[in-house]
Length: 117
Image (cartoon, rainbow, N blue to C red; front, side, top):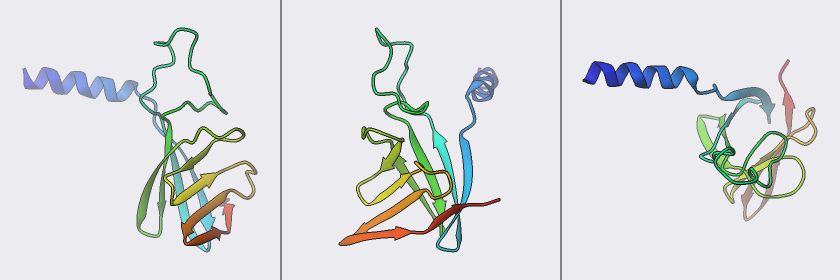
């Protein structure tokens, strides 16, 4: 029974899409961003899911790996390019040559980011 369950779980993991990833340099340190799908099932709702933006859905998010930290930021419902925040950290790629990476620490700290070649 356990072997069958392991086989089924392995097959399901192969069917799930791998998260998309991108590498950046932010304030001189490598930053890796992985987009992750949320728990929304767009086919399960009558009329589809409202508020889709650039291929993302409510419930989607990003994992940001930077300076020995991993941040998990959910997608916001803001208009425009998809943005992600947990209230302290903010990530948005409206301009692919200069994404926005911000941190609220009393005031707003903006990190200078560029895509890695």
